[in-house]
Amino acid sequence: MAKEKGRKLIAQNKKARHDYHILDTYECGLVLMGTEVKSLRQGRASLADGFVQIDDHEAWLHNVHVPEYSQGTWTNHSARRKRKLLLHRAEIDKLESKSQETGHTIVPLALYFKDGRAKVEIALAKGKKEYDKRQTLREKQDRREADRAMSAARRRQRA
Image (cartoon, rainbow, N blue to C red):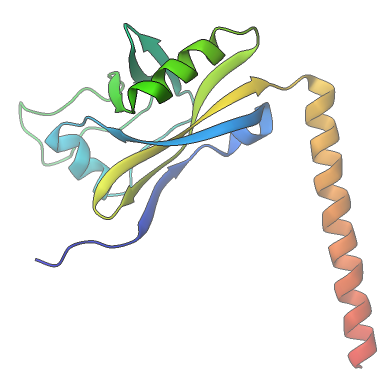
């Protein structure tokens, strides 16, 4: 059996980038059951309500939905159980101290397979205010309009 190479995206949390200012990102492993890995290999997961909490110097991923494996038996996992994250001690300590600050939280951004192993990208984030969200949306829209205008001008030049 050939070993998997590269990165295969399973799930992404696009709403996190809209709702939070991303300050720092970390890649960490997950402690999973066999049926969870099989369900993830089918490309089924949701990070929508997920968050990371640090208890007793261990990082835990909460509220990430990995549906039950369809061919699973009594060994099947529960869909929203908390899962342990694998990080270095220094990273956990840094995340714990930063997340204690007001307005800071740790959110999952992406769930993927990297060289055959399940990984999750988490971010230390600070919540955006409503006006920040509108500003970000406006900047994105302005950038899109400028790109559209430049491509139209290039098309007119060629013709």
